[in-house]
View 1 (cartoon, helix red, strand yellow):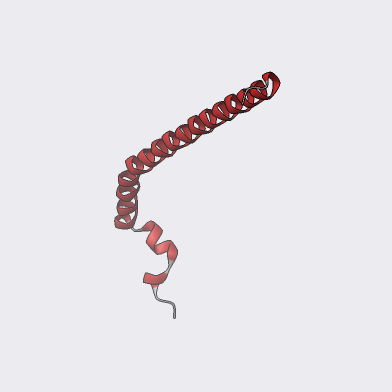
View 2: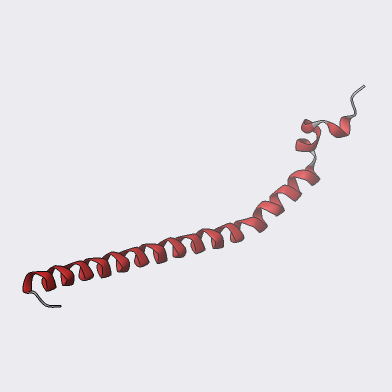
Amino acid sequence: MADKTSDAGHFARDPRTTAATENSMNALKPIMLFQVSMLGMWAHSIERFADNYKKALDETRWETVRQETHGVN
């Protein structure tokens, strides 16, 4: 005979379980929002780094072309 305490439906209908789950989800929400905002800031920082790297690479390439064209060593 199956024990009722191990039945998943029993846990879902238990008001204490649903209250504990709701409290846990309410506590997690600000943490998740903070992590998402930190991820957005990190992504923005990586994009800025990539833009700066590309700009510096282009400047270096054009300076090299200019030196080769004008015979400057």
